[in-house]
Amino acid sequence: MTENLELDANITIKLFGRLDRNAELIEELLNVSIKANDNGISISGEDQNVEKAMKLVGGLVALIKSGEELDRITIRQSLDLVEAGKAEEILDLSSEVVTTTARGKQIKCKTLGQRNYVRAIKNNTIVFGIGPAGTGKTYLAVALAVTAFKAGEVEKIILTRPAIEAGEKLGFLPGDLQTKVDPYLRPLYDALREMFGIDNYTRLIERGIIEIAPLAYMRGRTLSSSFIILDEAQNTTSEQMKMFLTRLGENSKMVITGDDTQIDLPYGKSSGLVEAAKILDKIDEIEICRFTDKDVVRHELVQKIVLAYEKAL
Image (cartoon, rainbow, N blue to C red):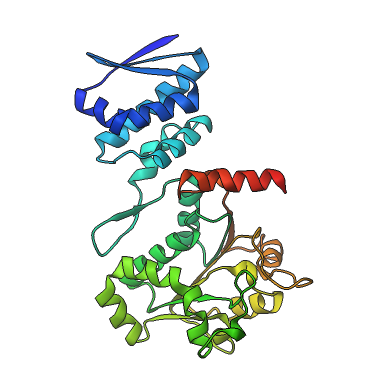
């Protein structure tokens, strides 16, 4: 079966990509042949594969016309939508802007899982984002925290993590507790700097409007008018998670993120994240969002690594 699609030359060039790498990826993913011609492109292969390729290319062309630049991740994520019977959502997905960085870069959802997560955070008081590395759990939560602050919905942004990381012994590191955990909070610092710009970020830190601290610093507090993010929550104990959740004050929102396959707690200790996701699943204003390998938006090898481990375990 062969299908033809009329396209302007400029659109065809952008669709094929540098050194035709986009076209080669589509051919590889769908086992089809894509050729450029005077009027656009032709796609050949088995009927079912050609039909998918036509839907995929149609969505990618719409992205190009909207000003988006194609990359391998976008193509793979768009194909996931096609295979889920949601090809019409390829353009819709890219049109939803979460926030804009200090340098004017628009932060958008790249997968349905990410979009569901963003909408859950907007519509609920407490949201759990659980899934593998590279799915944007923390980054999108920070982006939404910045959006809420700029809109005047909250007065503070509070970001915290438990001080347990991949077997590292904090006691052997120099400095006080804050100095010891600073390296583990670095992803949060980096995301905030990108969103606010270094000068604004520094000023907000100095004024205490942005607070980044280890989880132990949350004990005994009531966190009101704040957007609070608990990162790496798989490494909280049951007691720590309960303590954190009960810090919630008026006009606040909490996002708890973690990967339940990377728990670094001592043997015999249960993960507060795993336990909370089971206990709180049916409560109104609390939503549990689970990411899969299809939501990984880092290097495409990360998706393959996550999938390989899921199959092996």
